Length: 447
Image 1 (cartoon, rainbow, N blue to C red):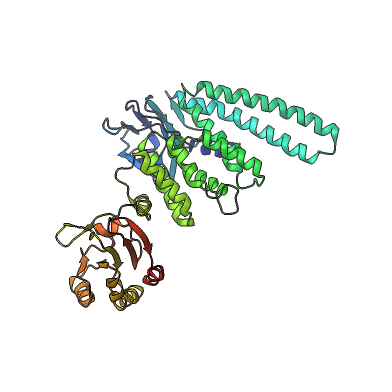
Image 2: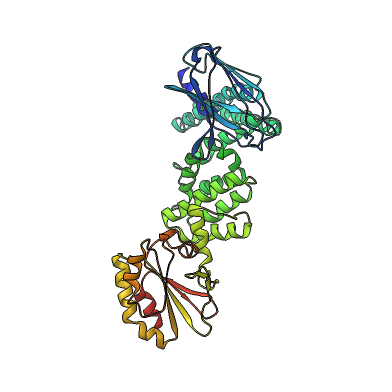
């Protein structure tokens, strides 16, 4: 019985995001907790966001009403009362829920949650689903053990067929109820996890992996995942499809784009896009990064990217053949790239050994660049004016810039600079010709 209690707690930890309708109340009746502070948290991706805190009154009552200007979407929420009370349940914006418990310690056996058809639905059907799954697994294991014993294998095989038919009927019921019950969609997500995504770490057959990938891309709902508490676990398991040894290596970016296309809400859309960008950067999946960036730009939904998402979108826009961003000058004016001349832009930081080596090499080859009709513009990531002037005073080129904002300055942001030195070569039409980590690489191309 203890195992089932834990499993039930786990299923309640999963949520499914619905669009909010209007704010309803959650009333807590906890006489054993009077005078204590209750914190209410909602699952959002890998985080739990504190949405409310309040003191339980002398009767043990406390009412949560989401503000009308910030309604709470359906999903898993948890309440916390220090030092050791944490309890998960499903919040629905269409229900007035009452959570009641007389005891000091709250467990799945001693609480009452009333006026919540959603929580009643999952509590009623969870046991049925678990029993079906356990029986099917038992038949699978038995058939493997008795493969050579026809008298035992055949009855197990027949029983499995009966159980799988019952599972199909159950799945059809969930689908039928999904338009009415949030909890039905919640259980669909749980079944997707158990029967498909969760198996990726143990499945090696390419045909089976392809089937799991196809089914997951068709059925995984990012809206559900975002408010489920299983965000990290799900995405982490999905990565098994895309590592270098996998048959689907190089398709992570396009697959994420497929999921994003089916995600109407901006909050989970940005969460998945940001996390996917971080994954691409972490594993060095440049082709996936390019595919993801292309989709995001064409989608028109990304107007103010931040963090890693901003970085990969900026880098994508800076590929050879694309227009170079404007360079902000000393007075905030935009520099015009010289007509008839190419421009070599150097991003550096004073005191950086690699930068000093690159600068010395650039000074030594400056006459060669002049002969080739190449102008030089240097942009520093310095904060201190004296340091900047001491470093740049002997540069033979005339355009030496610094806004004293470090790597957060406009020019560094516009060019997606995450390390120095970095060189950009721009032609006389303002088109990027190349990006280089060192001058030697660029000089070799000039030869």
